[in-house]
Amino acid sequence: MYAGAKAFFYALSRSASLKGLASKYGMRSCDSFARRFIAGETVEEAIETSRRVQAEGLHLTLDYLGESVRTAEEANAATRAYVRLLDVIVAAGIERNISLKLTQLGASIDRATCVDNLRRILEPAGRHGFFVRIDMENSPWTQMTLDIFETLWQQEYRNVGVALQAALHRTERDVQRMNELGARVRLVKGAYKEPETAAYQRKADVDAAFLRLMRILLDEGTYPAIATHDPAMIDGTRAYAAGRGIGKDRFEFQMLYGIRRDLQAQLSAEGYGVRLYIPFGREWFPYFMRRLGERPANLGFVMRGILREK
Ligand SMILES: Cc1cc2nc3c(=O)[nH]c(=O)nc-3n(C[C@H](O)[C@H](O)[C@H](O)COP(=O)(O)OP(=O)(O)OC[C@H]3O[C@@H](n4cnc5c(N)ncnc54)[C@H](O)[C@@H]3O)c2cc1C
Image 1 (cartoon, protein in one colour):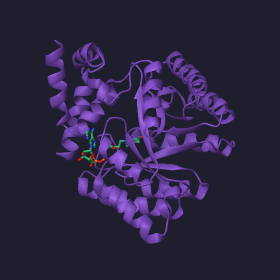
Image 2 (cartoon, rainbow, N blue to C red):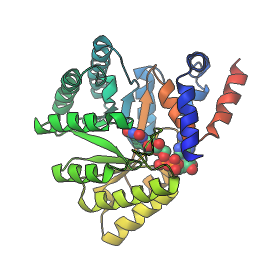
Image 3 (cartoon, rainbow, N blue to C red):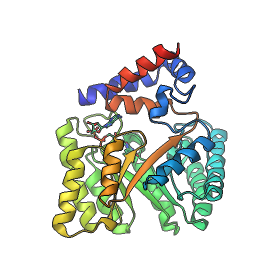
């Protein structure tokens, strides 16, 4: 079921007719179904959501949605949009933290284009005191993502970190490498349907790997982000940190906008740093479908939403 649901929703995410239907109804009004997970299609909506999130004492990272762009023009446009986003965030006075995907910046066109585009973002981001997180995409991109990250790290861009996925067999080595560099890691379970050769297929195995990697990151990492909504992972992290005398200021929890708001508030009230990943933009369909794949029960509110709006 765990891998099966992801595969099913991945197949659906490639359906043009479903995308058309979802795009028509998903964000149409302020209570449309996609708004549960996506802050809006415009940067203004994202800033408004960010202000609300900050007022609740939570931290944030803003993600301008987009991935798998096919042309250098599209990658250039996404890069320019991110550079503009930096200015908007500075002007709005909200927290300076963004997340991005390398296939949005041209990784699938060629590596040099992507490195150049990422540098165009990291440079002003560094000047304005931003932290930039590189999301991790599916496993064909893992090595390239880490190579591009290291290329820029070696060029002294240090306001940047990566996400690593517990589901992948390779991740312990990658965690160790990031710890050697002193780079900040966001640990996630992994949102993509992966082959057995690359990743654990059973939830129990992914969970065990997540806890193992969390311990390495808490012991040896640089301000790791433990990004999960799973109470067992969160409790495991809290217990391990408390047992080792690792202070609440040495790591943070991260969750996705719209998921487990109760847990977000509870952890924040207990004094843990909690950062929300806030996605916005018109290209929300693949992101939205991954959220459905993680919890097929979410399909219920989507169907109710479509029926109500039709
Ligand atoms: C801040 C952040 C950044 C991320 N960045 C990346 C990335 O760069 N690359 C990547 O591959 N993945 C990323 N992910 C997604 C991650 O890999 C998982 O797919 C996702 O977090 C679900 O796993 P979980 O740890 O919450 O555990 P699960 O075992 O999947 O879920 C635990 C519980 O959380 C709740 N829950 C989980 N997902 C949902 C949902 N969609 N809707 C409603 N409730 C839900 C349910 O109560 C569920 O029982 C990110 C996640 C977070 C929180």
